[in-house]
Length: 351
Image 1 (cartoon, rainbow, N blue to C red):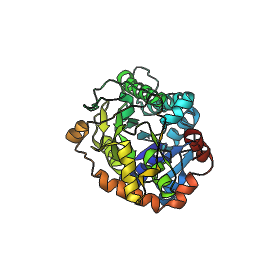
Image 2: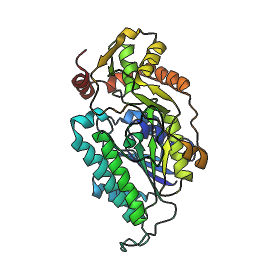
Image 3: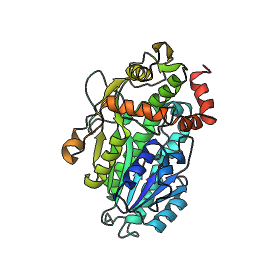
Image 4: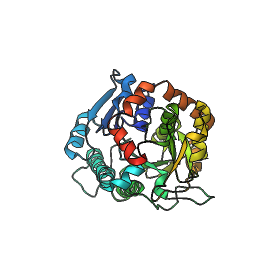
């Protein structure tokens, strides 16, 4: 990779990925395009601000004129598309912004990459592209829907999203696939399981529970808390994405899982144990609509074909994650002030 465009690079996974590729000689230049909505935070990237290989531009992926000017100026050969509205609860309250950003924004990015990378830009039927270019769509296992007590999601599992968020991501994935099938655009799609680790916005399960427990506040658990997820450390996710960019076959989908199936209630209890807090802090709240019961990723394809494997055990990863949040309380307190606090109270009440 030479010149890389990362969309949504101020978010949780995007910022971890930018720090990862700037560590060593993995990239010549990376531009971070982010609108800095509620979950985007440039503090996540303070350690690379002075790196001459890094540049930040505030902007919307739906802004085609901006995209065109950035491609012309920086001549990107790689696009890694993280930018998305991503919180399921928010998608239930306001689906429209999810469709606009996640679907229309993806189309704008695809159109711009296709136009810039074509060897014959005026030939609408040409499928010839500049050598070495690649568009990578970062997606989620939620596009597959829910599993029963057994079985795992493979790349051949039909898409069956159950929330407006996952429906918007599935729609974007299908657009990306169509641009490969119709136009020959060199693409890959990765679908990951639940990420955790440093710099995650505190509306998500693990940082929310750490934050509340540390302050002896109630820990809101949906339903009976027995929703099962496969947990993937964000650093393992970053290495997987880089592996797909380096070794992935154009047009292919790769599932990325951490081999760590845990029920939400088990996660909460582990965090309470790490912090030496009582289980009496657990507060059961009404389950959200369309809440998938179980996810599990079969990562055989990426491990067997590309040689990637997760390095973090959940035990080591959660211990490191809890310690990170405790050592970054000022960051957490700044993030959990203002707009987030009003949203938190709206979703979970004032307790």
